[in-house]
Image (cartoon, rainbow, N blue to C red; front, side, top):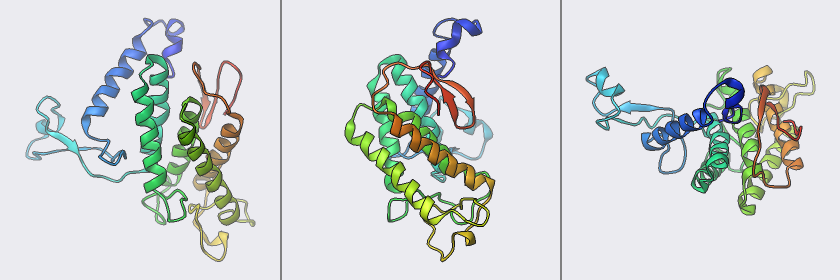
Amino acid sequence: MRLHPYTSIIGKSSNYYLDWAIKEWNWFENSGMVNNYYLINDGLTSQDKSSIKNFISSNDNKCINNNGTTWTYNQGVILSGLALLCNATNNITLLNIAQNIADATIEKLIYSNKILKEPCEPNCDNDQKLFKGIFIRHLGYLIPFIKNSSYKNKFISFIQNNTISILTKSRCEIDGLFGLLWNNNSSSSCQSVRNTATTSAALDLFTTLVKTKQSTTVITSSKFILLGLGNCIDEKNSSM
């Protein structure tokens, strides 16, 4: 969807990327990966595992939700896509689904005090240590499109509370790195698992907090250009 506004520059027909995005969403929505709790599991599996042909077939309804882990990043990356697709099609249902996924994440993938939790904690690999940052970043992309003030305020409050928690509990003063656990309850934040991956996730959180504090109006039309990990700029030169 981020390429949709630039089809003429790229040399594609005006709706080339939009049509593909609609096709992909229709497949994804009907695939079963979004479970009954509005959380996205980690993939599909086959009802009949006796043949690989059954797994790759989509016409005989053999593929079903694999009940795999509901990683936070899987909940995140879809949010900005649905927001941009809603913006291009005026299909408000897409925005409602994004809101439901975001809401389910901050209600279910958390510690008891509403701080974001990755299912693998405290034993996450370096890829998994990035996941919470990815979710928060895309939640930040979604927020400017939200018209429902109750959802908007809830999501912003969640970001603020997580920021307070990580600043007070997860930063090691010796090396300046932020730990994996945003709800760190150990006697010292320097005892927590921490490296550049966990710190990158924390920086995504801080950047998103700044972005949401700047975002007080609803976006009705925007063209975002990706600049790099966690960074973009729109036509009004608002950066993230």
